[in-house]
Image 1 (cartoon, rainbow, N blue to C red):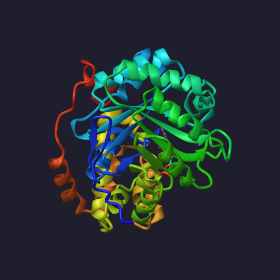
Image 2: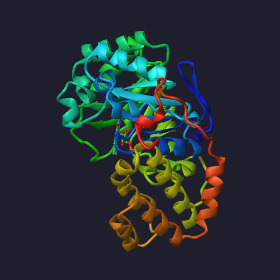
Image 3: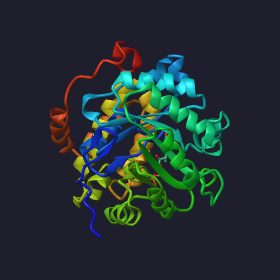
Image 4: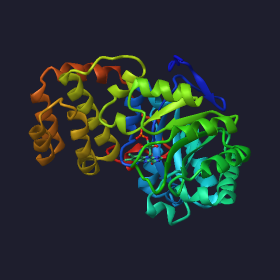
Length: 351
Ligand SMILES: Cc1cc2nc3c(=O)[nH]c(=O)nc-3n(C[C@H](O)[C@H](O)[C@H](O)COP(=O)(O)O)c2cc1C
């Protein structure tokens, strides 16, 4: 069965213009990543997980995650935590910051998070998970979605027990990454569970895990009945994976790759400041320039350079035509950030 990825759908009252969602990824899903995702066809983009405790303490760096640009919408901001009251307070801040959807993380498998009772641990405590969802749903007027794993242990089917309860508690949509927390990212996402979950709930389900091609996206949508597919790792340094899933099969030229990377660097410096951006960006060089696009020594050379300005010069020297592509991209981007919670943007990074 052929599935139309361009079909729009809804989470609550929020219209999502395509059936492709860009995954929340800690250490990756900065604003530049999300804006790029929207340009390449994602109907919905998500922030990385944001600590509700950090928001409630008004931690400056945590508040920076609530910086939202005009061209990101629709955007879900994801929060994590274990206390219903603190999660509700954080959700209100997310709503005030201008997000379209509040997403709750019940999937993070990292011990630092699960040992506090948050992330995937919540799947083992359905009463607490439901109390969190209920408190958040009552605190906001935005729709609320939940992202979860299949459960903690390998082979677990906990998501099928907890998922319907979360919907009863107020979740307007569920995202399932059908690996166990123990699996981390090994093995395969078992989307037969996604199909089972779709049968059990009357809200849209998003399928996350191992969506790397248009064929895979079509198959998962057709065989699970999910409303949308979510793409994570395949889009790291490769926004063309998104447009390919949406049906365009053009491979990018070297000039386009360099232009997108340089634009990504410039935006990230503006968001995080030069110092934080320098370390943050290193992993992106290999992601962008890999896949046979540039020789390996070139990527290694970039990582050794001292300043981001030098990296940019080196990249533009390797593909001189990229300057023109970059100029066009920058001209097309809408200018001006939204003000965040009435605070000047400058305290959140590069100014
Ligand atoms: C580096 C990295 C960071 C992630 N951070 C988050 C996160 O903050 N919140 C979340 O719900 N999932 C997170 N995930 C999980 C992804 O959203 C997604 O469910 C998972 O990677 C499977 O999809 P994929 O095979 O398309 O990558 C992360 C995954 C990766 C690889």
